[in-house]
Image (cartoon, helix red, strand yellow):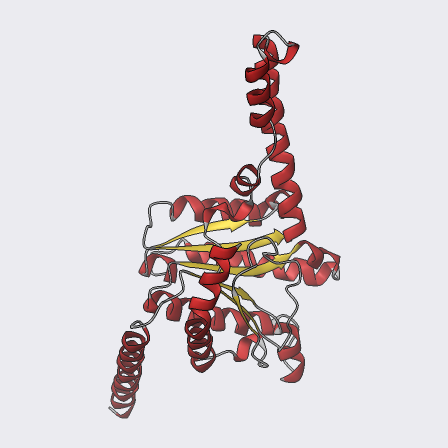
Length: 290
C-alpha cells in the first residue's frame, strides 16, 4: 500500500512539473523560437572521473541528459536538433575506448527504432551525418535501419553527427560539386559545346554554367538536410567549435554553460533560448547584410 501511494505521489509530482514546464514554454513562445539547435556534448569523461564512475559510465549518464534536451526541444517546438556524437578525431583515442563507444552507440541507435522511443513519440525523422564508411559495420547498419524506420516521421528532424568533422564535410561537398560539374562539362563537350562549335554568347553562358557556385557546394553538404543552426550549445565552458558546423554557424548564438554535459539541465536550456531571443533581431539583420 505504501509503495502504491509513493508511486502515485511521484507520478503526480512529475505531472505537475511537466505542466509547469509547458506553461513556461507557452510564455517563451510569445517571442521568436529557434528552428534549429545544435549540441556539442562535452564533458562525459570528465564527469565520470569527477564522480569516480567506471569508464564509459559518463557517456551513459550523458545519454539521459540528451533525452531530456531532446524532450525540451520538441515540447518547445524546435523542429531541427543536431548533436555532435562522434568526431573523426575521436578514432585516435585508445582502441578499447573507441570500441566501447561504438557498442554504446549501436545499443542506443537500435533503441531509436522501438515504438516507445523518443523519436517515435514526437514524430522525429533521424539522419546520421558524416563519413559513415568509417564506422564499424554493426553501427553503420544500425544507423541505416534507424533512418529507414523513422523516414515517415515528419514533425521534427534529429541529425546525429557520427564520424564527422566540418572540414571533412566541406571537402566532401567540394569533391561532389566538382564531379557533378565535370559530368555536365563532359555532356556539353559530347554535344560540341566544348569544342567551339557554338557562338561566343553561348560559350560565355557555357563558362558561367560550369563554374562551381556556392549553392552547388551547399546542396552537397552533409547538413543540407537542415537549415543553419540558430543556437549552438557546448557544455564544459568551452568556446571552441571543435570542427563542428563551421560552415553553418556564422550567424548562430553560441552558449557555453560551465557544467559538464551530464549535468546540463532545464535552466541551461531556458537561458539559451532567452539569450537567442535577445539577439535574434540583431543576427537576422546581420544575415540580410551578408
